[in-house]
Length: 73
Image (cartoon, rainbow, N blue to C red):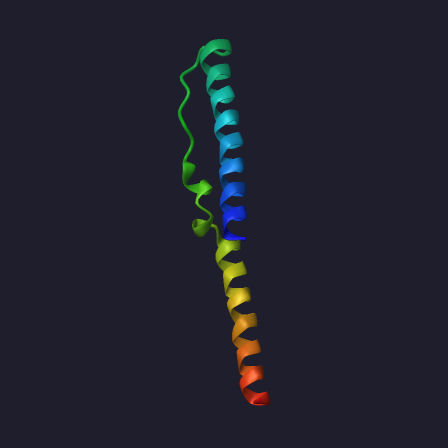
């Protein structure tokens, strides 16, 4: 599964860079204005609050399942 996520991330990043390249071309050639690359930190899922929240939820699920299993044994 981790490999699928990596491929998915690479797949999406490819399109983000394609869109940014189109945006750059439109600014420079059609609008005749200087283009500045946006902050690319959004490409790192670890920086997203939603990603960290999802990891916390998953950790809580596994922790509660572990406690339940320990209590049953």
